Length: 305
Image 1: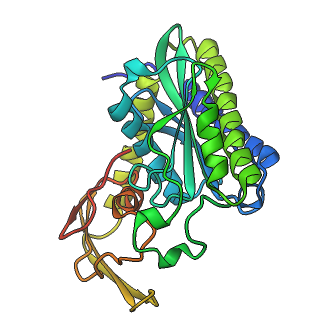
Image 2: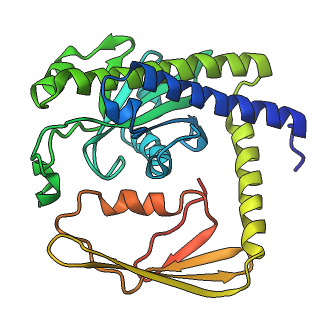
Image 3: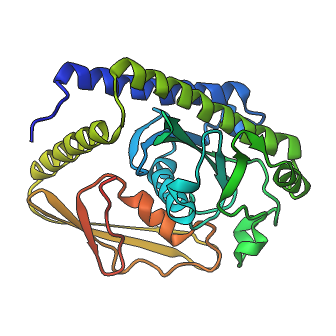
């Protein structure tokens, strides 16, 4: 199938997408209340298409966030349905299994509409200064000890802020001004991405991002498979040990390369720790966000996007 995008047009669209998320990242740095965002860079900005597939993420993104944010978008689509989303909505969650793996990271999303049709999502994740719960959360044995749990819900509904939710968040954290201030910084970044993306669609006369996304995905996958083919076939092993909490933790992986595919086998890795803050499922998404690979023996299944 012939692509409708020539090399020059594709480069222009791709560069503009990256510039949009990079500008949003600068907005978070300038407007956030805490040093976790404006100094530690513990956040990410992303654009996805209407299906929740990643189109671009800011250049300085945290790797785990760019692996989990598209999955969070798809969790919202499955839980709420695209038909319940409206212009002006802002979605929020810090669910460990639907987000980044621990509740200190708050994900804020905005469905983007053009001519009444859902065309994309702007999405951000940022580590809060406090989300309640135990101060030394590594000692927590239950998710309930880690702090306030925000399920998949709407922070803003058709332009109207849920004031009750804001007050509940403020009442359950030790740093209400910083925590809520950082959330609003994320909202502002999402609105900036929406504005810039709609301008791109108008300039490029695009009614949807699906075709552009598929072209980008195909080229990225092709480049990855080409790179894998350059590595000699065989099995490559690595192991490491960390201190852990109650006992040392072992990490083992065997990567088997066959042609343009990789199979990851984590046999021999320690079992999940009862004190681990990050959910296993979210870290599985992070492990292989864009790699054409398969997994065995308890490892994660790779995803293309």
